[in-house]
Image (cartoon, rainbow, N blue to C red; front, side, top):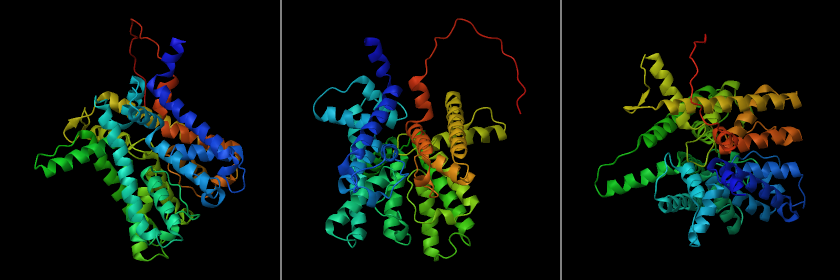
Length: 447
């Protein structure tokens, strides 16, 4: 029995199992009659929706606002919030609030989810995570109310504002509008508020903590210092957004955006690139975009958000480490450097391992989708799979028409994308103790 408990509280395994348990509970609740307007939902659709909400993806197989009852939409919102912060974070917060002791395994899971290294002040971490989350969501909801107050009744305006604010900060992509945010394509306020929430939700709580400390230092006229992690995350995030938005704007200026006024072209390009980083909202018709633009969005979705955030993907830092390594090799440098700091060899190996696992998962899932439904176009299947893995939620419209087996494949892909392929590997792999011997090295022809 003790051996079973020891295996269960292994942090990566605990993280994986907690998300799995939440998905199952969410599926059961969404299957209950009061969750839908019709009083019923196919089990595979309930499972898909629950997974999409818990994994903050946003892929949908039904028309969310018209299919689910107000109770069902409230459950979806709770699942999004739970999935965005993490199940262990919520349980630890409840225990701490009730004056109960939080176990070491729970602390390791939470700290590992939000910080690049474990720090002893666990209470401070937990407090900041909740303050940041609800603070940003409250500000976002208040700003969105300025626009949504004219949409229906006061209660509907509040519901729209809160739901979209939570969905944006958690990078979930669920919307209470059937056309997502297409109706607000030219609305500057809605676009900027959503971009603000998506970007800060995708930076990671460690980065937000350092920004808070930096602001405090500025007020006290002290020297501001950022860690390498924060500088790296901010630089890569800005680089991806700026480069991606410029490329999308130029590629679609006379194509998908040709009928739009200049303001909507600019807002559409910036919003769609920011959203593709794991949020999944859309203000433009993705089917009107060129294959080149879809490929750009696929790359952005694959990279995803930053470590310790509410988003998915292989993460910005993984992309940055590989880029720095390749650049160092091209320039003939033995050790890759960023911001005058050398990158550890184990981080490089970890980055390449993660990307290799992610690419293998994407390839296998795409192949399976095409085998089961040969009528799917390669771009549709690949876009859907990368969107699921990156927990993004953007789609070319094929999700509701997928075969039940393909829906199940995307469920697994969303789950693995949320907890991370490496975490899954660590969670259930058996590590053999190293032997007291070493094999002879021999070269292999590569390339």
